[in-house]
Structures are given as structure tokens and as C-alpha cells.
Length: 279
Image (cartoon, rainbow, N blue to C red; front, side):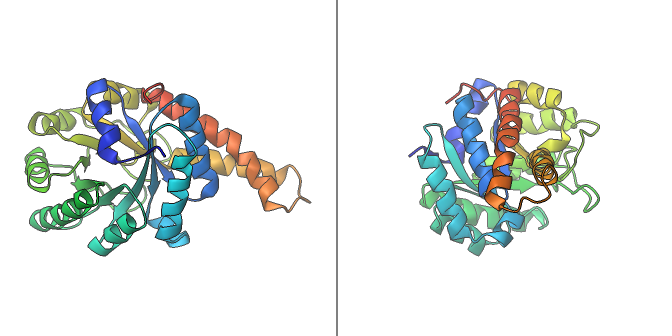
């Protein structure tokens, strides 16, 4: 069993000058491909179950799937709840065998965010798991606007919650299909100057590979959440598999053809973040 907590994979990344990808899972085919890619690259990996994934598959099933995949390889695999919005949801994930939970209180007033995140941190730590929090608000492409992280508030949040990782808003946007204008380096440096916690970028698909590589090597950002670009790779492979034979209907045969392209796309991400060869 190579199941790991978030802190167990982020602490070495922070000191070693690399980042670990948090790969957003939607089903068996992609999460299996991510673990195969991690094994091939000898890299740690964070499997993430977000709200969309949880709406499709119950948490206990996802926990069992993540743990099964972790047992099938000998590189560290983190079973992570992404964007947990309530204490009950985080509690249920820990009961389901997750080794890490993210409590997302970014829409709450600062004091309330701190208080609720601290409660989840205590719960996670008591269970031998890790907790990620968020300060500032990371928006969505074509949707909710972002609110940049205030460095002083980030310092207060980190010290009063004891989170293992801190998601920040520095120009990153969820669900962005192409690299944007780049992250706010001045804001990142200001946050780094006031905190010593591992920093997390949500919406990593909207950050260029070059900037991801630079920040992984030269900043406290040691986790990039990446989903959209991998979903695009999966979707393109699935489209090719369906279109090449209109008479084929066996879903297993069709879905098998997504594996190789998604493994290849994930391996590129590991290499770009400097995570290859770290496990």
C-alpha cells in the first residue's frame, strides 16, 4: 500500500524544488491512467474527487477506488477530497478512507473561514490525514469572478488554522482551456514572505507549462490542480475512438482507447512539474 497524506508528498516537494500534480478525477478510466502515469514516471500523485465527481459516484466508492489504485503501485498516492464545502462532507470523506480533504470556505467571511477550516484541520489531523484550505477566491472561466488573496490575511489564516496546504488566488481561474496572461508573481512573493505553508494553485490548466515549471522549482507552490487539459485529452481520444467505427457499441472497447493518450498527457505534466523520479 502506497497511500500517502497530502503533507507527506508536499513537504519533500517544498524543500526539493518541484510540485506534485493534483489530478482531477471523473471516473475509473482517468484515475487509473493517472496512477499508471505516476508509476511510469516514478512520481507521487494526488487523486482528487471534486464536486462533479462526487455527484456522479458516491464518496465510499471513490475512497475504495483510490485506495485500490494506491495498493496497485509503489509510488505515493494521495486520496484527496477537492472542494469540500461542509464539515459533514469532509467527515464522510475521512470515513471513506480519504487521506486528505480540502475545506473550501473561500466564500465565507475571513473569521468564519478560519474557524470552520480550523475545525476541519483538527478533524483531519485526528484521523491521521491532511487538510488544505483556501483564502481568496479562485473564480471560473465564464463564471464567478476571482478575488485575489490578501497576503496578510493568508498569513493569519495559515497560522490560526494550521492547514497543511493553502490554496491561493493569484490570477488563476478554474476551467480555463488555454494559458492565460500568467500568474501575479508579486502577489505570490508577498504571500511567500509571510507564510511557510505549502501553496496550491487551482486552475492549473490555465497556467502555461513554462510558468508552472518555473514556480514549481522556485517558489512555495508545490501543488498544481490540473483537470481541464486532461479532460480535453480524454475527450479527444474518446471522440476518435467513437468516430472511427460508427457500428461499434461496446463501451469497454471504446474506453480502452482513451488510456494511452491520457497516460501520455499525465506523464507530460509530471515531467513539467519536476515530479518525475521523486518517488
